[in-house]
Image 1: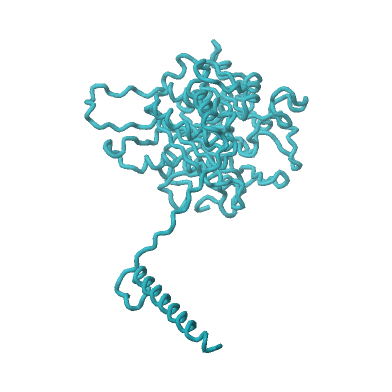
Image 2 (image 1 turned 120 degrees about the vertical axis):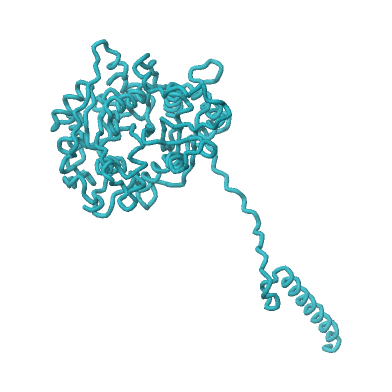
Length: 474
């Protein structure tokens, strides 16, 4: 019986060896560089199978995103469906107060065939995440401000990331409409996550710098009209805004005050309804608004916080603003601007000069790369753990730009409902500057910062440290 199966077994072995030999030949022909006999032939790069593109999850339909876009581009128009959101209603801005902010009209005698370079006079920067309910009010305000100032002289840069409420869809859908309006719009989605283990402040600093990247790119490009039709100068005004409920006159007033005061940076005041949402349904403890940005803002007289926060973290003393700075307190009560060491308070306006060079003192904010100018950053080794806006102001002082002021006629909140309520409580800008007896008062600028500034890394570990601690050379 063994002989009976011997011949089939031999045949099977021959077939197997033949197939194996032919397979090796195919392999060698397909991959010549693999075989020692083809050592002088360059291996052909394999063509990997195309990976399917990862689609970002969609949280808002195109139709709904379109309604948001129309509500931003055509606010109040009966020709488009509206969202029914309880938006903050904004008054018309002062008819003549802000006309001086408009850039001069271009020379109409220049031949159209001659390439021209447009200087960006106003650069709007924002980092947004899960801000859908605020987008109609916030972006309408920005677009109305741009329309007043002149779209050809403005640019808008928005960085979005990790939104799960449709913010990304609306910001992306805005592109065609803004292009049609002649507005330069830089929209970027970033994977940077402030909630990552690497730390919140480093991530926030990176996001803020990313929002300014189009400005850095334009400044680094040669001013050649044919290749770089947009330029940035030290006189370019930057408006960096948080996710706030704001009106056009809020932004215009900040620009106006920075120019009138010859300030390096100005901010408004931001508020919150501690323990409530500002909708009128909260308890009595939340009836009065509370100044919000206490972790960042520091006074000029003593480098202290705007109100005292005891070690237990209580905000019970929030109503006693500027309790140890009589100059700031008096100016605040008169609604006149006053100098501070640091502020952000929901939104700031500053010049591009400190970002484009090493500073008036030849000192940059980065230390090792002074020519880059000031950037947002996290604390250095040995430096107080603090927010990137406070460090930004600290670096401005170090670079010679210490004219930083609060404009108390500008008041922000962080929702539509509370934004409306804060305007009722604190007034619109026009409530104050529209008075017949209103006069803008200047500031007697102090050139030296306080010797020490409060470090509030934790409420239960507050200490005063030299204002320039950990700066290069210190």
